[in-house]
Each structure stands twice: as structure tokens, then as C-alpha cells.
Image 1: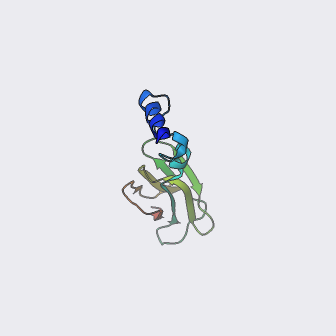
Image 2 (image 1 turned 135 degrees about the horizontal axis):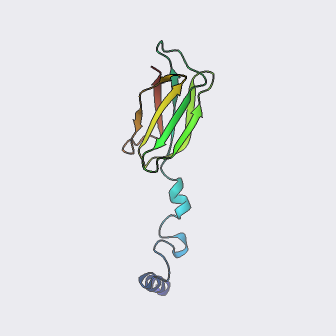
Image 3 (image 1 turned 30 degrees about the horizontal axis):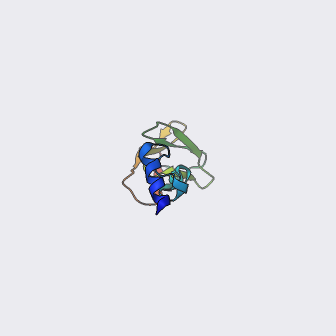
Length: 121
């Protein structure tokens, strides 16, 4: 009980930041950053629904504007890991002069795996 009182006093005066106290109150920042990650994957296809190898797939974080890219494999597949579920993202594919429609990966979507088919026009 005494320890809890000391901890409360330390928190109240700002000596110890909230959530620290030996890591027992809240998850550490590093742990919190690893929570809520998803995988965004799918296939790039052409107008005839054939897989498109070598297409560049872009994934843009709408908050930070950071863009990641991936080159589709010989079967037209792509995969992004560690995508923050707390942020909205846009995904699209391009190859030569062709581009797919832009799709939104919403923060409201609770799926840990988001699968998309990106059709080049």
C-alpha cells in the first residue's frame, strides 16, 4: 500500500510519467506500436483478368503521406506487412501506361488481413 502511495505522489508531481511505474500500468510505447498491425495483400490483374507480373503496387499512408511500394511477383501477387490499422491507406498499381483504380484501406476495417484485386486499365 505504501508503494502505491509513493507511486501516486510521483505521478501527481510529474516525477514519473504516466504509464511508467515499472511497465505495469500501461503497455510500453514499443509494445503499443506493435499492436494493431495488418497485412495488405492481393493480385494485380489486366483487363482480361490475367495476373500481371512486374507491376508496381503503391501503398500510401494518408496521415503521414509515406508511400511504400512492392513489385508484383510472377503470379501478380503483392504483400505489405506491418501496416498500421489506426491509419487510412490508399493502394493502387501501375505498369507501363496502365493504372488501377485507387482503393482505400480504412482504419475502421478491423480485418488483420486486407485482400485487394487491382485491375489495370
